[in-house]
Image (cartoon, rainbow, N blue to C red; front, side):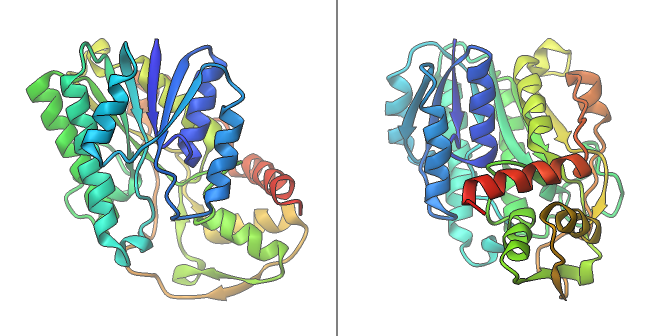
Length: 325
């Protein structure tokens, strides 16, 4: 069986493709390779996947309906799709809002329409985000909580994706699972995220900026744990576990860690002290994220095992190897 993975050149997409290939699946990876961050990093991820005989790559924009329909038509027997392509980043949505609607909303609709018209689609797994919890003050965040108070356009587009998926699962009987990711990090990670930015700055002797005076907390989730959750979701469509045709899960580490603790671990792994600059909370950011993963454990057997204390040295090791530092 061939599995379609969008966002294959992205951080999570690359690791999901690799895990699927490692277990013997055939994978068609799709990516537009945008220049939102370093294109060379994306191409380096793809070069790792190209070594697998079961991997095929298609350069395509998920928001281009005709292009996606043409591409899908070249592959027979697509039954399962992992849709991870998206325009990421909370702060960038303040600068370039239209790309978020195009990629995250229109692109998601294109994927839903593909599933609607493909024969016998067994399951669509798609990426949501912890950002959908927005102004929710209840901790930890549960999938039973309301998500109608987004505080960034990025969060609003992801909440819209969930609503559209729920609608399509009801109208067209397309089994779907949405996964709310919580601050995923690890080797081959995104350069626009704090752990990557802090690591680069500390190694180069440059200052790091801690928002909300360092009093922010994040549920940092190591990539290997997230990938196991994605594959578990893919293998357990909601209709197979008595959950109707649409379900949403949190994939987090279920621990809220302070930025101060994160920086301390980076300093230890790098062997240098960070030059810290304290700043106010930027618009659109959430002060704390913390995942309630009870439903993920119950339905998917999801059980994250890699702590920040273990994951940070692994990331720093990869960073030094990749950048020759």
